Image (cartoon, rainbow, N blue to C red; front, side):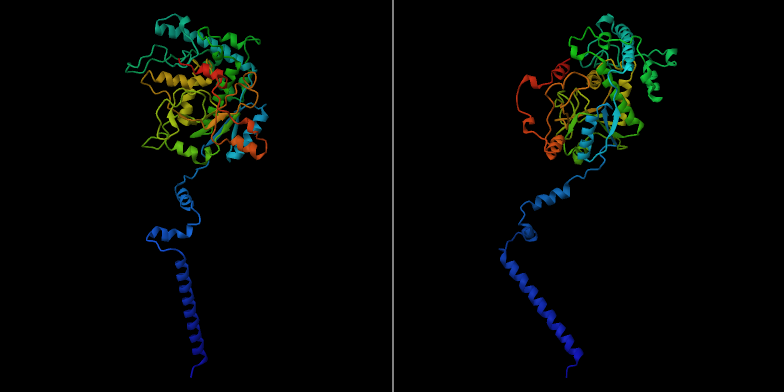
Length: 441
């Protein structure tokens, strides 16, 4: 006779057996719906066959590089405080890219201290002509010119030859004066700037001084290359951005002008891919490069072979400074040239790096390790009035594969398809100033 306890146990056993039978039957039925194949991988993955891109997505997910934000210690934007319109645009650009930016105040070209700088440049040029003429055994009047490799930029007063085994002689220490506290004029300028911005109190001897006339170089046939107050203002601003980077202790920073457009995915792994190919010291892993141009203008940067990345090349003669990455070592090296009293403010600031690259190709010294991304990932917008010249400049503004500014304007419903760049092979689309300044030396 079965007890209640025995009956319960027996019923549970029957239920379990029925459930197992049902599961096996269902599994056999499902397997019969799919033709049998000998491919084991297909058997393992047939649950994904409804999505033909599933395998591609799996590989993409497994191999995609994760962006290591922030990609730069700081992103600095050089901008006039009065150009709030541009600052607003740059804030929106930064928000779209999910990055933080730090504005660096540029100097208005009408600031009197820029005329004071021009007077000091005229003095330094006079001394420079004398030293270089003696070193080269030529007349002082033969020193000058504003093309790449300019006499006003070279750190070597004598003639250069790639056959020299030693580094060429450099300029002697620049004279100091009691007027500047036994310092040279650039040290005096920097000391005042570091003391609460007192450099703005500097005044020229003549308030009506014409900078262009004072610094006109008779050996330079192209007026577009001559130095004017806007050139000095830009030069000053770029040195402020670089000095800010060093003050903040950055290892690598991005310096932008305030009228740029940026490739949409620059900060989402694109820069990481490029940065990973740039040279590093084997023993320490520290950066072994100085500057990388993410934006540049018509410098023929594709002339050197690709450097471990399809878009990366050693720089040839990059013009414009609207978007470049800079290491701490590069910042020190650049400032040592840009603020050398023998050459500071004597040319456009974006002539310094191309000139140093041209000069170092003729000597054994390595003045600068510079790289360029081709095509550029940062371009000028050219959609508003220039702070340095009349009008907006030329229509040429460069191309991006995926413009952040275009995405922003489409999102706001402000994009006009007529703005799309046309493939027109016309001379007028090339920036005349850039064409002249990038001409062969």
